[in-house]
Length: 138
Length: 307
Ligand SMILES: [Zn+2]
Picture 1: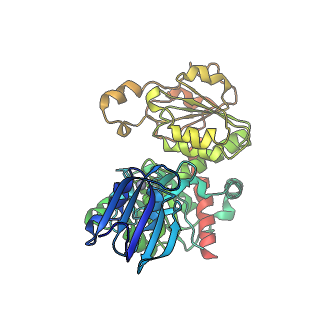
Picture 2: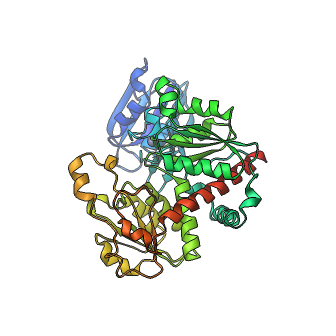
Picture 3: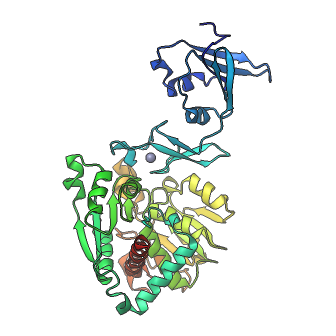
């Protein structure tokens, strides 16, 4: 895979330096049978700051909520036939469904089967998400 | 439309006023409500024992002329067979018109409310919420103090895990000119998120102290809580702290004459029995007020469900 020129795929850009692996894990990229490049500490042309980049050699559907939760402000570039067809700046999602699990052992989600793990953005300023069931912070 | 009450904040201040007005009307005119819920069934679904809360709900429904389906061992009858809270709520929806549910897990009532086709009242979900206790507290404050504003409210004991305390703070923080005095051992202080998100955020004055006696003279309301053994990981901590904040007549020496002493009950020894005869003791009135507020809430939710 030529990491500079993807023909059909996704480039997740402007990842805060150091967060690429977390995104890699939460998006389940390890299970993907395609080329994935993780570029750490690249220097941003725009700001001169360090950033991470993930390039995926496939146009799989990306869970934007995961990106917005881990690193709001990242951009997703979707490339088809060598052309940039979509560029999205990802905001913090209001709700996160089945992205993370509630860590509170006293929460009903720890015992109830087939239940959605849902978190709500309760404090956008401080990026606080709380479990809708027990209100524990994510 | 079906509607459930999981958290005290599910009710707007206007709705709280409506419930208080209904409760006061029930107190004055009980005969008017004696058949208000005729033909309706309340299912009390208790996954952990809480005889007081269950009796209060059941007495409330009886006094409204309704019937009660009582499941006192929901945990052994369904959960042990692996039935989920969601499924139990769906099954009970087929038999009853409204559910009062108690469960040891936080958020269980919300799970039930999302699955049920009838209103669910949270009768306690672990350490999380217990809105009808707060309704009882609010009616007590209203009847004793006449208003919800301009009060200095002392909260004493387990402020860390005491859900009734958090809930009361949330409810009273919506009114004007109240102050809170937080009285607890360092180990059981009010969590910082309540201080930050509820009190500091809205500019509500509060002070923290470890001395009940120092706090006493300024209080209009004193809310005592139980230091619960199950909240501690080790017995030593519990034994060391459980007797720290016991209210007796000596500590009441400098209290106001119209202090309103409250406690969610059951008490262990945090209020000496000698205090019971003092006119300022309101904790048994609170029990009765709880029944009236549960009556008002059942009426409201059944009426809304029928619309
Ligand atoms: Zn939770």
